[in-house]
Length: 147
Image (cartoon, rainbow, N blue to C red; front, side, top):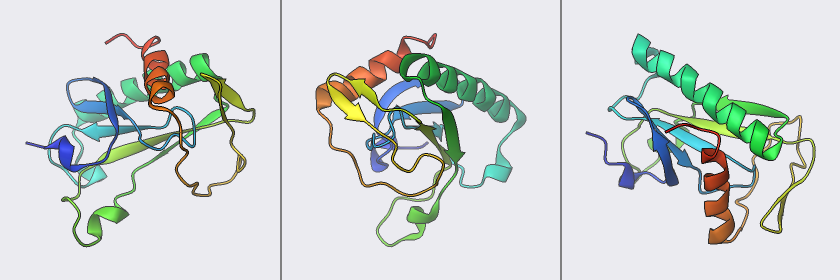
């Protein structure tokens, strides 16, 4: 059994049979989410067919929601487990990073989100936003997803 409180995946949004979707704590790219496998696993190659199929559904759901709600231009997906191999971290756990990318600025609750490195893969520092705006981002994504 996975204890998700050990991980800083973010705010719970919704779940399916095999995956849980979280709104990531860092919203420097508006709508960034983490999609975590419910069972203990650390290798992408060990996913079962039904888990892959459900992941395809989630990819479609989240991409469509963020495109419709915020006008994202494109999306990056990644499975990056590097930080789990540092000292004093929870055990490795398979999860996906969903990172929307924007050619244009977007405003949510009066807070502006830009993507100065659009077209490049450069890490960005965490963006400070209000809790109200953070929760509004999650609500607006969920408007487009049937849970």
